[in-house]
Length: 303
Image 1: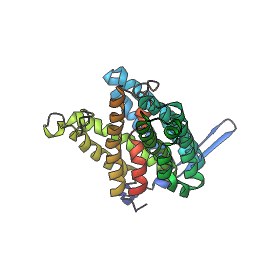
Image 2: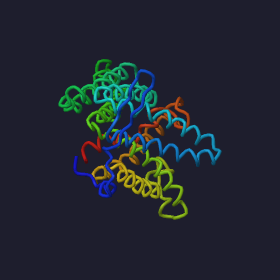
Image 3: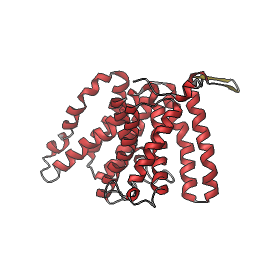
Image 4: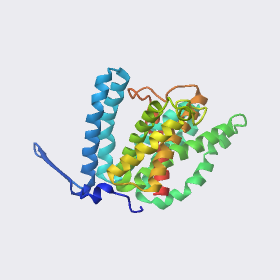
């Protein structure tokens, strides 16, 4: 990864010098390094965000804040433990997202089985043998196998294309979480903050005609103003976390905005608002990680 711009480091702030030590009964916790800094920043951001959420009195915002407070440790702990736990976490997320995508794309069971196998295989390959991911394009073509075996002339092309798309969009993309290594939490946090910044930019600049212009007819709420907000927010967050590079900025901004639009396309075709309903304030898991599905591979390539 290219050397990051770090203005706070130039001022003497050493993010690697942070440490956290405490005892819970016989359990002794001793953490140090940049992960502790990321943890502290995350907790502070959640605490600060709680104030306007409580003041607003809006139940949907409270539901979103509560979900984020739950997601933070669920995401952070596996990423901090190491590549093995990150691979297992990525596989678990991919499995849930595949099931949600399969319902949206109306895929038959054989195609769903193929995606579930790849949802587990790709993250494990990224952990155990990253070079095996070079087979991803070949396996995407092999996703036509269920349709070929069934002789499905009527729906075979749609099934094969949807399954191949899902194998790359979900299974392979989430495997990049493992390839990012110790930068994974930084990228995930930046992507989440960029989503919020895009919402703020879209609402804060809506009085300006150019800012109200939609980026795509697929989602009128995704506007040029939101893109500006996303760019500013991503730059500030990456600078704060000490991970600013031009490539990573492009990956986070383009991925966060583009990922939302890709899922909007999938949901529009399925005729639904959300991919699921079990995450309060967000919908399904696919609705929550749609940005990451483009951010992660772009971050690996561009940074």
